[in-house]
Length: 229
Image 1 (spheres, rainbow, N blue to C red):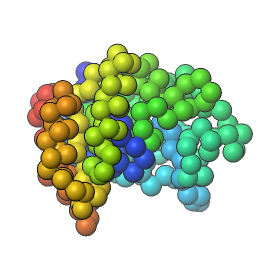
Image 2: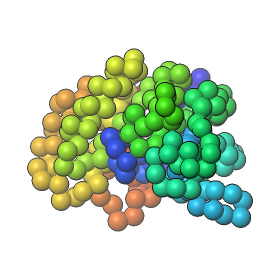
Image 3: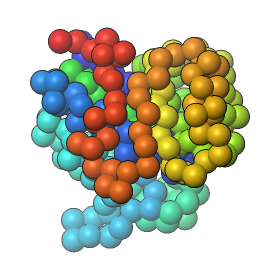
C-alpha cells in the first residue's frame, strides 16, 4: 500500500497547493508514482471543457498516474468563496459520502505517494452538519499541516494541530511556508512552532519569486515521512 496523506492549512492562502505540488514533485524525483485529489474547489474558471480550478490543475500536473481532471477535482465551483456557500449558490448540497467515495477512488489506485488536498483550513464546512475534516476522519489517513508563516500563525497552527488530534488523526508532519517574508521575529516564530508542534518539520519554504513545484521541492524532506522505497 502506498503512502497517503491529507494536506491541510492553517488558513486560506497558507500555501497548501504550493507545498502539495512540491511534495509530489519531490516524490517523483525519488522515483515514486504519484496521485492527488482535491475533492472540492471554489474559485474555478469556465473553459471549453467545463469549470477548471487552477490549484487542481497544478496538482494534476504533478501526478505520474494518468488522472482525468474530474478524478482530481470532482466538485468545482465558480464563486471564490467557501465551498459550501459556492455550492449553495448553484443549487448543490455537498454530501460527505460522495466526497469520500471520490477520494477513495483515487486512493484505490495505490500510487506510491498520494495527497488529498483540502480547501481553506481544517474545519471548512461542507454542509450544515459536516466539514472537510470529516472526509479525513472517514479516510483515516494521516495529516500534513501547511503553516502559512506570518503574524498570528502560531495560534492558528496550534489550534489546527489540537483539532486534528481531537479528531483522532495523526499529524505526520508540518511545513513552514513563509507567505510574508517581512514577518517580525521570523526565526523566533519558527523555533516556537518547532518546539510546540510534536510532529517533524518537513521543510521551510521561503518566499519564492517563482514557487514552481521543482523549486519548492528543494526545500522539503520526504525522508521524514518514511515513504516506501
